[in-house]
Length: 130
Image (cartoon, rainbow, N blue to C red):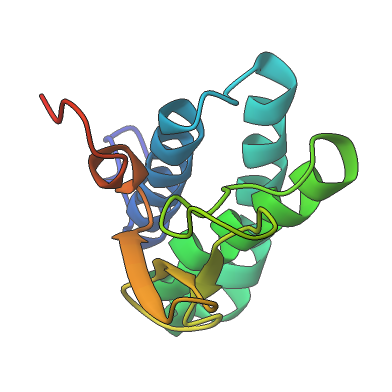
């Protein structure tokens, strides 16, 4: 029992999901401490979910993004706001697929994929020095 266990694919998926969603929060400047705790809460809940259904590991980033988006709606408002539509009412991007691999932020009004989860900073235009 003394040897170090390798990081399981499940933990890798959860770490990746956490990092991707945090990157988007930072990109849209809402990564305050209480918001980060929303991510932690979601990751903790999704850990149980993925333990029950390991094949769902590829879906975790999209689910965490949706969890955080829902939690932010209550205390912060719509997030992330669509950067594509310059006119009309501000509206949030949505995660697609809702339950699937390779989740993206999409604008349903314009019918466009805006960015992969974790990629909002590169979709903002301006300086994209990574």
